[in-house]
Amino acid sequence: MTKNPNILNWLEEVKTLVKPAQVVWIDGSQEQIDQLRAEACSTGEMRKLNQEKLPDCYLHNSALNDVARVEDRTFICTRNREDAGPTNNWMDPKEAYAMAGKLFDGSYQGKTMYVIPYSMGPLDSPFSKVGIEVTDSIYVVLSMEIMTRVGTAVLEHFGDTSNDFVRGLHAKADLDAEKRYILHFPEDNTIWSVNSGYGGNVLLGKKCFALRLASYQGKNEGWMAEHMLILGIENPQGETKYVAAAFPSACGKTNLAMLIPPEVFREKGYKAWCVGDDIAWIRIGPDGRLWAINPENGFFGVAPGTNAKSNPNALATTQKGTIFTNVALNLDDNTVWWEGLDKNPPKHALNWKQEPWDGTTSTEKGAHPNSRFTAPAQNCPCISKEFQNPNGVPLSAIIFGGRRAKTAPLVYQSRDWEHGVFVGSVMASETTAAATGAVGVVRRDPMAMLPFCGYHMGDYFQHWLDMGKKLGDKAPKIFNVNWFRVDDEGHFIWPGFGDNLRVLLWILDRCEGKAGAVETAIGYEPRPEDIDLEGLDLTQETLQGLLDVDRDLWKEDAANIRAFYEKFGDRLPKELAHQLDILDANLNK
Ligand code: GTP
Ligand code: SPV
Ligand code: MN
Image (cartoon, rainbow, N blue to C red; front, side):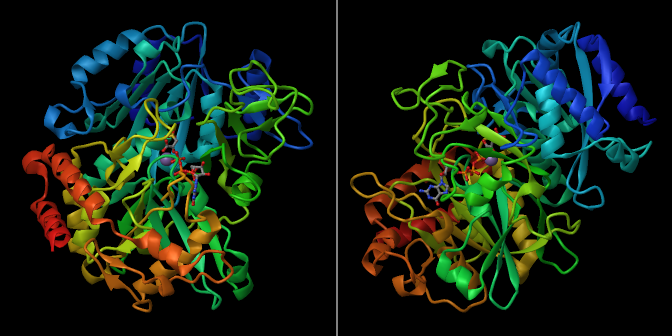
């Protein structure tokens, strides 16, 4: 498929290591996809679903111990330990290659080695980058085919001489959780993933390349790889403005990216367009502004909670050509179900563990909380017409956010870029099922990149500050949101989902200097009357409550931030230490 010696020589090395029975190149053709789907169904790796109700849809169940990212087994392997920073696990590259080399050695015996050439971003985009993933899993091949642009066209475009591609090697091996490693070698453009079959660990174009390696490349090349959705808001005059938003895993990116405006806003002519739901690659354009593309070609979305009310666009997206992972199977009609889809769990089903399951009597869950759908972006009813635009879209605002039961208000605006970088760097959120480990624990997750930054996070903060200096007055405004404040009974106060548009409209108006605000200890906040509540059953008093800044909670938070910042030692930019002093001073005024 290619004459490129850099690719061919690397593949020879890989082949010598893993010792496959045969090698198959993924060309991207429909025939090959059909053949692989049939093969995966014949071995039980996938199950063909009801083709009338869910055409071209399949179900896959991963191993019971392999259902989420494994942050404690994810490593950044740089020659110098300090370059990985205090927030990453580090391993010496030589040791890592030797240790994992033993696990890969002969791991493909009797199996097929699939070679997937893929592009992150449209082939003709100056933002885009190429990767090759080698895998022993058809599930990975078929998922990569949905999530990225794969096949012969990528190799043709890449050409016969370039060496700028990410080398990704994956083996399911024996799925031993004790020998599971997700290893990144940013200095070698290489990823090794072994003993997992779960998306975030094995679809190497996604978190491993498009965030961990790309963030490192971006720092060196002057651009940014971020854990952000990209959303366009069209006003009744037909003008579309774009925002990018970073929320930690399972904190609402896919939902916000596909939001449907509340009825009163739809009637006025507002529309929302999805450019991306998880990752943004961001560059300074010829006009000096920030421009973003979504490097992915599909959505790897959380299934539970997705329904015709919360996210009808996501639900519609999953109705064809989708691979479901770890949801429940309705045996009566061969369709899928998950918690929060509707109030009618199937009576005759298999749960995600593939055990007989009766949703009406069982206390066990049908779908795993981190069960997912892998669906083509082009299925999405609100996909932006700019989705394939090689130049991306210009950003008016950057939004940070997380899951905070109390401290963070519904929305606030940073005073300037530097303060905005501070706001992003001190983000905190309650942990979710997207990664293994405890759920619901508050942890600091700077820019939602804690698990995804491929280098020293202090240097990452500096890179953000440097980008701001280059942007000057063309920099997007930076905001923070929290959809997840709860009342004393633990219920969410803000309705969220489509109604989040109300907050976005204040944000966009602020970017144009049109909306009101008051300055508080933490930044600018809307007054309750600055947010349009038309058609919503929520009083201005409740809204005021959502905007309250509780000084005691914030003082606790500031102390926690100080302790967090200490980790970075002298690699913490002094601008951020200064911003923390300002926050302290404001809180003690
Ligand atoms: P990753 O794919 O893991 O990066 O997650 P994500 O950030 O795309 O999160 P997603 O949109 O899938 O949402 C995760 C969970 O948050 C789902 O259970 C949603 O129902 C819930 N959620 C999303 N938006 C809102 C909101 O505005 N309010 C509330 N209360 N819940 C929300
Ligand atoms: C996340 O966990 O942030 C995801 C899913 O988007 S995964 O691809 O598993 O990382
Ligand atoms: Mn994500």
